[in-house]
Image (cartoon, rainbow, N blue to C red; front, top):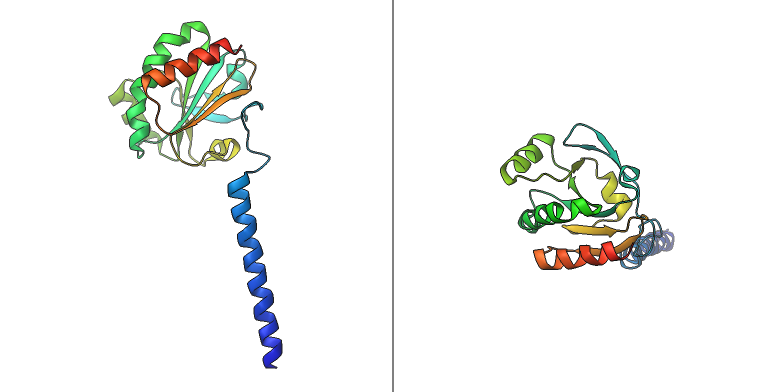
Length: 175
């Protein structure tokens, strides 16, 4: 009876180890479903602060800067003025900056947008569906997408004005 119990414990331990190895490998090597540089950007269908549902196809033919952010994320808050400035500079040249708020309620986001004067499209991802589709981990994460819909660059972390400007210029020239 004792030997049978030990065998069961070994089998359970092996199962736990295999699950752990799989989990670590998935994080380290990623999933094939997560878009990567050079691949087509994931689609989304999200409610905007303007009350309309927005999809990736709404922005077809435009270069896109898609920024995942939250008011609870200090680097996200700090980069908002740079994103607004670049939207003002590049929007007439076919570049759309899209902010996707992650997991917050509409009132919190409305208050933040009113306080900061952000004018570019802000979309809500309360269930984190777009986060999952894009494979976003740490925030802020910004995807630079060409007018043809391919990911040109992925930036994890805060963007300053100069870096953002150079990256958008490169994106526009990638058409």
